[in-house]
Length: 480
Image (cartoon, rainbow, N blue to C red; front, top):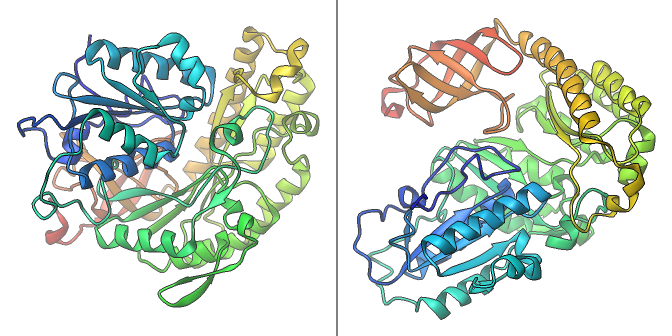
């Protein structure tokens, strides 16, 4: 049985594979003596959940609490759960169980927290349960069970950017909550509500603080990034006394002027996505578009309640690549959706072969409690067929991915270093988002450090990763 509170264990995380991190390393309090105000924290799920965890941890630090990475030292444990698919629910319930067994005093929050009865049925001893982005309620419960400590805020300063669970050189920037779409495989609106965009001034203020703290890559996330500001009618906001339209294009334009990489995730394929491509061609925003398409068959897309004109999508992709030849497109697809025929699946494969997408993730359909797709029960696809289609899909995409990466061999690219080991440096170029895409290996360069931005020439590639040699070293002051 483990006795440490771990954040983002890849074996527990279902929607994002990410390196294990302990909060004690983040908070810098691992060696302090407990004063009855230590909080353990387990965070599961996607980058949106990660941002929620960072916000809660920041407020805990502001209130004078310490964060520990062991169950034994914790006076209370918070589990921030994921509840998007059944596998995520099971892993969240397992994390709650472990926290109860190892510590006994457990608060639960996050997406699964919206289903309190489901948690209570399995774990009746949980102290309190709150849903996603319920920051104030979480803090109220913490104060109830672990009284707010007396502390001098001038001797326990919190960084201007708050507590971050990512490496110092990149950070997630969440621009909205919720979603107005009603995809039949998804329950996000029931968990997190309808679209609720942050004020543009608040978003830009946070981004500016991140860049000033040394963040070199801002990863923009939300449930539906391209819909940003639509719930507010696209009205004008203000930042630094200047008017700024509250839409994704203007937000991206201002973010791109801050001097950091800007990477856009979860961009729903609305027509106005066209407006983002010139910003990428100009170099304001990374030429990287995370565009979750989910399928290509018009019939299946209709069942999913997704846009169904895949011919228009192909035309858009062709147009985007003409405007911005360096554009990298990432997407995700579902195989084995209820009612998907072999003909539907072949349409999807044909689309892949024509679209030549750079980075692609594939998921076998999994039932989600409360999802509208469950009503298609008689059309459910067997696990054997799902697995067969998944393997065929990945075989086709592996060839495409290898071809798309090979076009970068021989080019000089900026590479942002994420890690260094005894064999050399490991980084990413503009084509690679952390945790979900490939890596760039620079063998033998052990003097580099995470956060270095170097110039390298790509020498080799496969279907996932690339290898490179340094062209320019960073300044000595940036090493180490």
